[in-house]
Amino acid sequence: MNPYINAEGFHASAKHSFNGGFYQQTIVQATMAIELYLKSVLRRIEPTNDLNESHDIIGIHRIISKQHPSKKLLDRALRESRKYYNESRYPENPVIYTEEFANRFLDHINLVKSYVDDDCSASIDDLANQYGRK
Image (tube, rainbow, N blue to C red; front, side):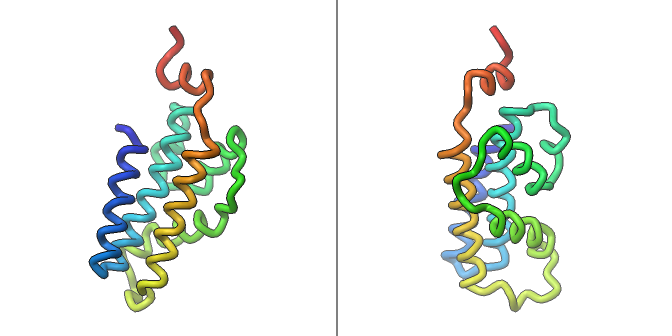
């Protein structure tokens, strides 16, 4: 599994859901994209970490930010994504899933993707850990 490629699929799906007016589904897809973008870094730097099999994006970010400090403010995006990871799948109050709210999650995806792309460059050691030393 390549989490980054999977994240891109969920990212595109979130955009399509948004454009189709499916705002609750936008948030479902957005939270998956965010999780997978972060896991793409964690699997590279700590491939055997148990968080690779979890949905704890706060914990995942805590680990990767030690090696790749964020120049962007991710706290709100990560907190909201974690909160709505399950709530958007099983909503008790679907009225909250408005266009404005869903658009905020598209912004969250872009922020996290930008962090992964810009701040989490792979080092030689990262690549050796991921693909084995030769």
